[in-house]
Each structure stands twice: as structure tokens, then as C-alpha cells.
Amino acid sequence: MSSKTGKGRPAAQLGKARSLAESLQEYLRGIVGGIMFSLPLMYTMEVWWAGFTEHPLRIFLYFLATFTLLLGYNSYAGLRRDASRLEVVIDSIEELGLGILVAAAFLWLLGRITFDMTADEIVGKVVMEAMTVAIGVSVGTAQLGGENSEAADTGMKGDEQQANSPSPDRDNVDFWAQMVISLCGAVLFAANVAPTEEIITIAIEISSERLIGLVLVSMTLGALILFYSNFVGAKQFTRSESLFTNVSGTIITYAVALVASASILWFFGRFDGVAPITWVAQTVVLALPATLGASAGRLLLQT
Image 1: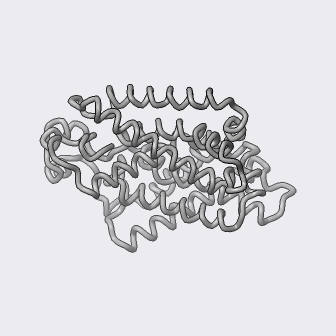
Image 2: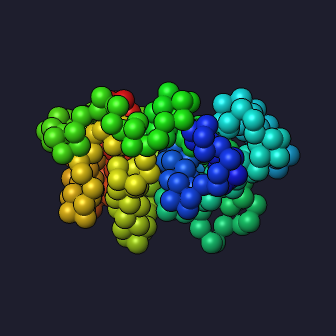
């Protein structure tokens, strides 16, 4: 993921430094991949408990095992073939760091770590979650980019690649078709965690400030996936880029996620016998994975 590695870049560009925009897009794809692949564990109570019940030595061995896996993946799949051992190590360290930051942010947002906890408990919980996130970061960075790999191998320029691509006109994307596919993606992601007790536990315990934070984070992630990260399929299945279409597309995508979340929770009886405010809280909590499904899932389902 470092600017020197040139991960996923055309052969003609391997020797060139990456631009800031390209590096940010790469980091963003890694973060999205980390969140996508670790979401079920983020909402799993047993993983929260393991952070303060497991012996520190086991947690440390888990950390080392994950780092070894990252080294292996980055050596054979994550980087260009001529990457040096140092570049592999640097990328693996970066992915671990991103995994730790993302896990800590989401655990705090979900109210699973607080400043009242001991340092051992916080570190344990973050490390237990972060290792899966880090692997997702590595896979997401390498595999979720929107560039055509065949064109990259032949060193084609971006304009030539787009001209030769059979992808549809972005301005002619069928709105209702995209909404249906977004709904499918939202249900696919949200249904994995909707029946669990963790959703209602988080909803009951979460503060209004964190709930607002979840709304903002969900919408931000949806917008970045669809309109900024060069996520696989984004150029083919999103409308032309303008401020209005970006804002409206983000709002519509989040609305789809909320509808999917509320429908699934109702189906599993999660609204029965609880106050309306808890309905809202559960829906917002579940809307985070649903938004990922409505945006990233929507693109992946069509690519």
C-alpha cells in the first residue's frame, strides 16, 4: 500500500511514484475491504469477550500469526511481482496499523470500548478485532480496485482503456434497476448480523452521540465507495459525477439501507415489545453493514 510499491498499477507505471489521490483511493479500498470482511466479528459478543478473557500471550501469538499471513499474502498476491522483501514488510505493517485504527474506531463507535475500561481490556478487544480487519485491508486493497487488470498488464492508458471497455454509459444507468440491486446488496450484508442479540444489545446501550456518529460514518462510507475510491464497478454503475448526483446518490443509498435494515429487523421480531426509540437505534446500528451492501455490494454483484 505504500507509495513505492505500485500495487495494481500498469507495468509502464511501476517505476513512478503514486499520486496523492491514487494513494488515498488505495487506502480507502483497503479500509472498505477491512470493514466488509470483518463486519460479522465486529458484531460478535464472543469476540468482544475474548479481548479480556484470553491470556495476553495467546493474543500476542494471534498478532504474530496474522502478521505472518499478511507477509505471505502480500508476497504472492498483494504486490507486484518484483516487490522487494522490505516493501512486503512495509505494506504488511501498514495494513496492521490500518486494521488497528479501524477496529478501535468502530469498537468505540459501537460502545464496546470506553475510556472507563482498563488499558488491558481495550488493547485486547482492539487486537482481537483488528487482525481480521487487517487481512481484509490487504485483500481489499489488492482485489477491489476498479482498474481492468488485463489493460493494466498491457500498459494501456486510462483513456484508451475506457474507450475500449464495453461498460455502459454512466449517464444512462437505470435508476430503478440500481435501487433493486442496492436493496439486494443491503439485505445480503445486513442479514448476516440482524438475527443476533448483539444488535439489540448495542442499540439499548448506545448513546445518542454515537448513534449520530454511525449515521455520518455510514453515509460517508457509502459516498466514498460509490464516487471516490475507484471501487470495482463504480465507473460502470454510478451516474456522472457532480455535487448533486453525489449527494442525492448518497442519501438514496442510505435510505435503501435503512429500509432494508428495518424490514429485516421486523421480520426477525426485533421490534416486538420494545420502545420505538429502540426500533430507531436498532435500525441505525444495522444500517452500517446494510450501507456497505447497498454501495459496495451493489457494485460487486454486477461486476
